[in-house]
Amino acid sequence: MVDILQQIINGISLGSIYALIALGYTMVYGILRLINFAHGDIFMVGAFIGYFALGSWNLPFALGLVIAMIGASVVGMIIERFAYRPLRTAPRISLLITAIGVSFLLENLMVLIVGASPRSFPQSIPVDIYNIGGLILTNRQIIILLISILLMILLQFIVMRTKIGKAMRAVSQDKEMALMLGINIDSVIAFTFALGSALAAAGGVLVGLYFNKIEPYMGVMPGLKAFVAAVLGGIGIIPGAMLGGFILGIAEILVSAFISSTVRDAVAFIILIIILLVRPSGLLGKYMREKV
Amino acid sequence: MRRNLLTLTILILILFLSVLSKNLDPYIYQILVFFGINSILAVSLNLINGFTGQFSIGHAGFMAAGGYFSAALSVYQGEKLLNILSFLPKDLAQGAIFLVFLILGGLFSAILGLIIGIPTLRLKGDYLAIATLGFGEIIRVAILNLDVVGGPRGFPGIPKLTDITWVTFWAFIAVVVIYRIINSSHGRAIISIREDETASESMGINTTYYKVLAFSIGAFFAGIAGGLFAHYLMMLHPSSFTFMRSVEILLMIVLGGLGSITGSIFGAFILTVLPEALRGFAHLRLIIYSLTLIIMMLVRPSGLIGNREISFYRIFKFLRRKGIN
Image (cartoon, rainbow over all chains, first blue to last red; front, side, top):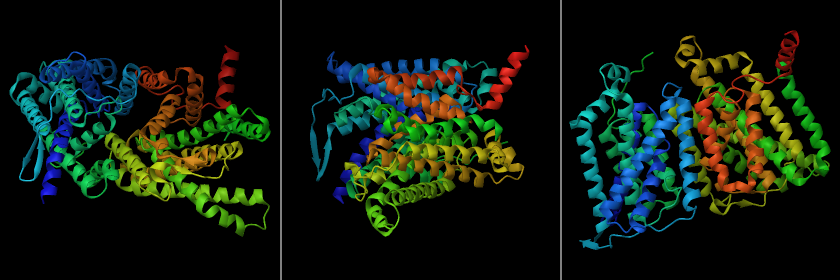
């Protein structure tokens, strides 16, 4: 029993990182109906900015995190401006192919800049281990969970309580109508990318802190799994992405602890296929009738 | 058939060349073999993505499934069958066994395509893309966990049976089969799904049937290509069949033109020769790939050839028009 609880705690740490990445997917999908394949790589870019900010400039952790988030949101906006905006009226398949292209471009540019070998992330927070009734908890796990929850509350606030958040919701409901009501769609979409990229970058820095290893291809798998998390919760729904992230993280850790660690990467996809077959609109999604 | 004359002639020419290729430079020989295998992959993916309009990005998974299956047959059953067929000349027996194993590998892939296709093809667009990607990964993870085929160590000791004649033969079969399908009434149904799925369904076309059909045929040829690949390299490793591989095949058909058979062959040619030409800048290669993908989509989303075909008919028509003016 303690064993299972222990693994669930580990799963929550991993899940909160998935949730952070999934939020970016879900927001971009909600507005553009685009699976932003490059999102996982923005997560990687964020981790590397954090790496340089913490390792080379020796900044405190909180500042490094903020710099990584700002840097990644700039990258996200640049990608949106030059790769996605010209294709806004193009068929969605073209957009999807472009997204795959951007994803590979980011990975390989990073390989060119920093090399392909993994690097160890600067450990600016020393590890403390707490033992609570046989359960082992590290201060990093607590930090990860706290930062994620804080960012999610902040996001929820921006989306639900601010003017730009209202505009985001309007654009995701009906782009043309929002345009007619005087909303600047381009800037709303750019803002959405910035927001999503910042969250992904935070996830990247936290992954660096937690797993202590970053490399240019680190974004591929977490990116795909975060997408699965977004679909699981109901794509386009912000609380859904959080829920999906946590469920996926816990499921993955439990499978790798109690079944086999080699099937770990397949868990997410099996969940994805089951959810797509059983409830394609996701756990929190409503069934939408298809209009012709 | 007249419009396809050019493709046919080129393939027959390659077939002749391959017979004469015994003393070809091994480097060029290898490039030709990979060109052939890539053509099969590209043409078969184009049937799914270009003609049926279903966005699959798990083609490497089917290639892996077929490749591993036929390789396992060769390694574990090849000797036995060869002994049974010992009354035949050795080359003939070997060839017949190889043919059967390749087809079995292809069929295994096709059955997998059927199993995967029936549930996933109900999904549309991006969901389908992710689901196929997921299946591609699941197949790879499954292979990693299968000790019979070496798992993460790779699968060595596959007999070297593939030569350029086999590759051209199968490329030829793939092109002809897919060409004939596209230009039949089934092909019209398949293309109508691409153009407008709802409309074609309301015209009484069983869209699920045709989607699954196209998917399985595509998977079959991907499996064949995998088998040829396995018996050429004599060694398989799960890392050859990652998502990267699927994207490479996708790039071939995007570059050549979604919905064009000659286009996919053209794309396969470029993507086989280009990496060799860029060998000096290996680290830039992938950057060039990804930039090509993005720029193609921005500038010419229909690909270099679009959905037209290169054929003698068109070339003659073009020349005649030039001549008159």
